[in-house]
Image (cartoon, rainbow, N blue to C red; front, side, top):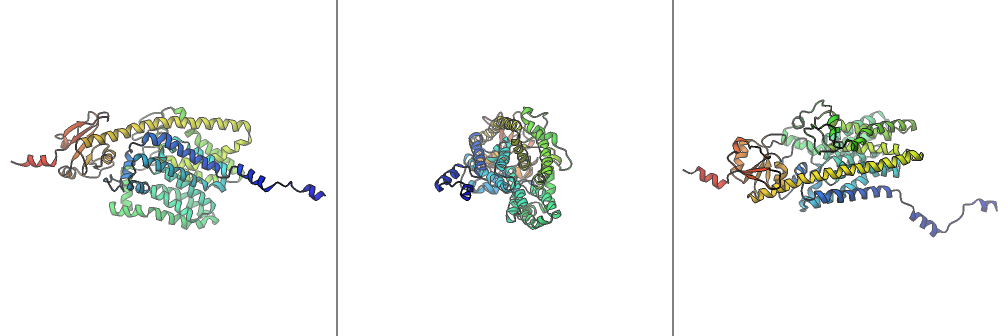
Length: 491
């Protein structure tokens, strides 16, 4: 009798299954965050930027385009973004379709990267970390753009997570992906992981996988270094010159000024960022990180907190200390890694009702502020891309049809949009000489671009100027047609 009384009450099997179906599964929160991330991109970014590509995007996307010439690929770049977009470009995807595909792919990858951390910090905390990162304006914008830094961020999150979980080939795959998208970033990521593995005995089995992943990801970069620049050291030297002579350049002020845009702050002469109140999260992030480390030390769970922080610091080193310009996307890998310990810290506040309510309010304000910035930056980016497309259309009306050549400022994105090759005789994208440029201009339709009120170089001042409509005064100086040149040479 007592045994029967102490036994748990029985429930009918059908009732139990019904209740289980009503209980959210462990992945429902992260799935919801990834879905919201995709929807935000498709509605707020893709619809506005689907008409054209930006400067760097044109360089990456053009590399394996079977229909149009590839833009000049400078030494600091890596091929990951070009390889990612190549199948869709080969299939004929235009800017709108390409951005839509990238938005969906980035949302799936957000889920996959943060999903690695679920056994380490829990399902809901993992989803919250993904929300913290995915709600940043630069994260939403970057998902639908053909740029490398967001994919480095996903690879870094996956790599550190698999390292802590004792992963093998998964760790190597994540490191290889980072190296394929940004070769220097992979080195910065591997350094703290390898140091940790050397000093902690039970992590040493990760060393060969770190080395294998790094080697696999860097293989293409190294081969290209020898084929185009004569070796790895020579490529690094050219990369340094392209970046403005890398050295000790404390860059925190520039990064702060660029936190709300522009997308590239080079040169960065502004003072405080636009609407500095919307950038307070950037100043709070280091404080939250320190607090997360202190709490983790007290709870004796240092590794899942300290390792992401150290890797985030390593990945930000070159962008905060070694170059003299900035872009908001540069720190995406660091933001993604720091979102993990910060999410753990903020989730602890739920134990205190007043602090939990305050955290929810602040999070709502943070997300709102990010979308205010996103709206402004997307509008500015859309206007710039529209000018590139308008300039390309203007060139085609002037008779610049493939094969053709465009040179001068903004030649790379405008040339690609027009289906022309592009070349520069000076600046960071120098790809030819003046003599070679003139030889090509004698063979194919050629135009030199200048800004409003700017004169062309001396060699092009006899070329015919045309103001391009809807470009704020950009002028195309069209070289004499080859037939006309032959007539001028006759007696």
